Image 1 (cartoon, rainbow, N blue to C red):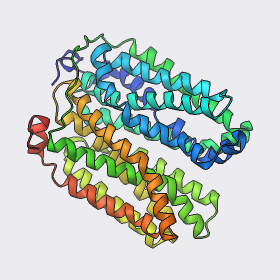
Image 2: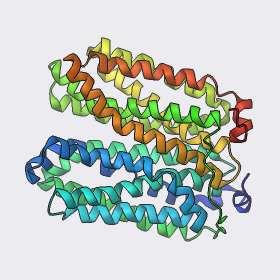
Image 3: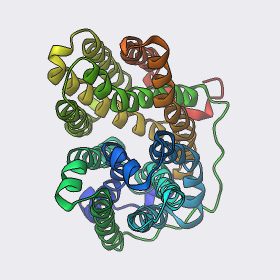
Image 4: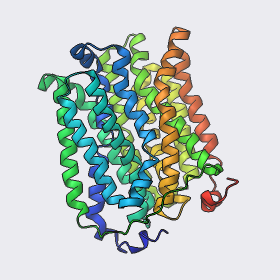
Length: 400
């Protein structure tokens, strides 16, 4: 265990305020991007921008989630994980509020970049904070904050359009999400006050570019992102082409996100009783079957999308816990997570556009939808290499 984790109280109950605070902080890491998707037509009409420019409002945060992930362990090494999380959530909340009054596309995109920077830092800092403060319960705490991330996504997906209708405009939806981020920031700051001050290690991470197991993590996370954001972007459009209404496909997207929450919690409850390899194999296999059925038997999509959401929630939670298994010190955990998120989200950011190009090339969504079960099988193949012994050797084993 890392030297910072060793100073943590023995009983997790004594750290409950910090656990609650981490959950509140994690709630802010998705709504500003997930909730924006359904509002893009309104934003285009309001600002008079093209589809390409509107698409940047989603692409920029995804790229930032990759680009800023390697910076997170550096920031944590300088000021400590707790203070670094405060910086990340503050960026999301403040830039989110400023986006509400952005007068045009340029300022909106610039502020979106800052929101994305906060998301990118926050994603990676969660892993560092768990290693720094909860190294004795890594999977449980990972499941708690990933469940909070998924809950934030679910609420954003469900509430984005109704809020815009009720409050008369997309700016008011962004205002609601940003005010919620301010509340989360205040809650985090209050809860984190009780945490003992850990001395930052003052060292910079060494990214494990020569570690085979780190590259396995990268591969799994990248494909997982392609599946999640690919389904989010194109499943509704594919089903509209089959004659489904937009309202119905919107509920499919909401169900997909909602189902991730209980899956994340279940992974934490299962704990060490299910190995990382077995858990990932079960989840990837479930995703392969359910996404294949989404392509071949759309009549049962209501059931298939729930199983796909459960699979995604489990895969995401396990993936975010893997860096904790292969490094001892918080800053080294951050280096592994930063590498995984950096490459993973950059690949993910390209996926919606490339899959859209595949639709244009073939004239239908058949091959696009088949990409997802194939990707899930690739995740299963990678997961099959994650033996307990290999995880114990960690990133110090340069041969992987």
